Length: 222
Image (cartoon, rainbow, N blue to C red; front, side):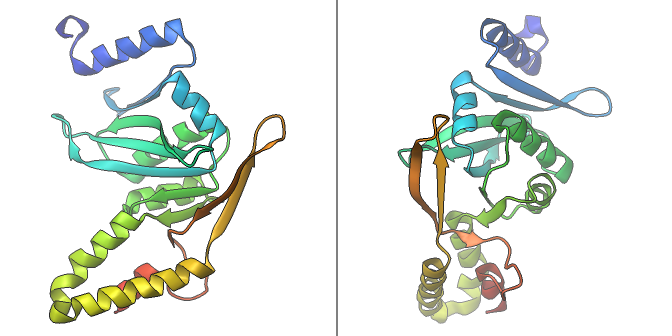
């Protein structure tokens, strides 16, 4: 590793070797103004095939913990025709600003060949903004885990003894919202046979489309 110049050059050299053997290996570098690598995006041939085939629903998130250089791991997950989660690609990057998140999403688009119908993500402002720029026609939603965590973090102490009652009422309201906003997505294989049916997403909408406050806004208002 030291002979190759350190961690990043070693990783890049390894990916180059893999790509020389199998061109389906994909990786992209993000450079700063001094041509220093500040981001690395990559996927295996299997992941590239999965990304192209199951492109309609994407879950994107970054790890809370970071490596020794302070870089989080950014990853995307797709849903296959058995309803199973499949890792589609990975990325390390120094910053989580709009420019970097745009770079990550553009790499996904280049691999998939088309934008997803649905992008599920957390409430990272730079990612939300980047998704609106790079995937304007994609329906953006927030995941359950972050919704539940944000509610508990911001309201449990403030509500005190009323927390349990509010939490029950909130999720009852959510279930009502869920029942009236189910979405069904289908995709077809290259030979035209239907591969996926009745894949229902019931996450909270990231935008209200002018129909009144979404659940995130409701939680803040309450």
